Amino acid sequence: MSKRSPKSVEEKLEVVHLLLNQEQSVGQLSKQYQVSKQTIQS
Image 1 (cartoon, rainbow, N blue to C red):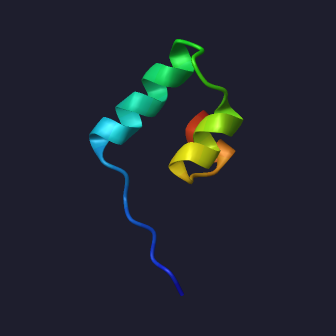
Image 2: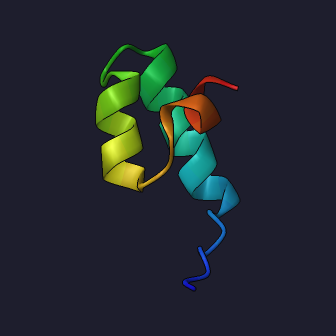
């Protein structure tokens, strides 16, 4: 069983920034940061 590493605050803020500025879609970000779409949307 693999254990996921937690994302840093900086990574989380970068995802929010990219999403709010419409630079990348939720799907693109979920693949890039290896998290589910639901995680990004919540």
